[in-house]
Image (cartoon, rainbow, N blue to C red; front, side):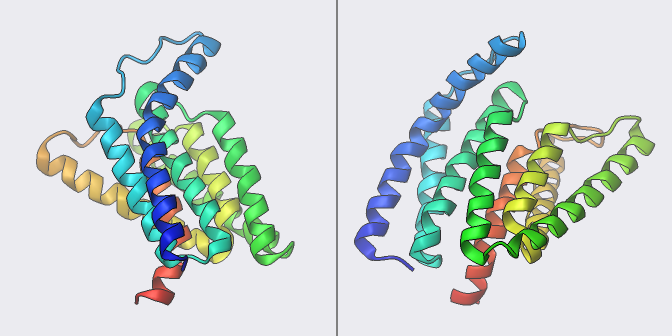
Length: 225
């Protein structure tokens, strides 16, 4: 846990940063579209979009400050910002930028080594292998049913980078959180009518939900449950 004044200041900063992330994501999406020769984003961030981003980043930051030790708070808050950026990019142009993957990988490896030393990389290797197996089985099953892989390579690469970051046994929290996010979204989509049996949808948000779950759940167990 962190001091009250520092937590309030960091949460306020996160609110401001969260408000600006959708606009930054739009600018970066325009850059990536031009770089790859794709059509630019068809939508612009609305006031509601910015407000939801600010509310999410502030809420998650407050939770992080309450649950996590000071030396890990900055990393977790940074990942919160990256998560919102990735979700915005996926909504704007349906890609997961390689630049974001490299940033997460560099920060994740630093975090793993700082937290548990070089031996933590063995756990990262095991987590990476498990994610490769799970996603490969999912893609094979989907291909057998629908004739398409169903999961983009950007999603697979993002999950692999996250596996390296959360390590072992954090990968189980990651996969569980992601599965719960997908399940809740699908149930809500079917009930509200915006999803049907063969619908496709961006996966970045669900993967990022699993990422944040993997970072926070151990501290929830210690401090709350």
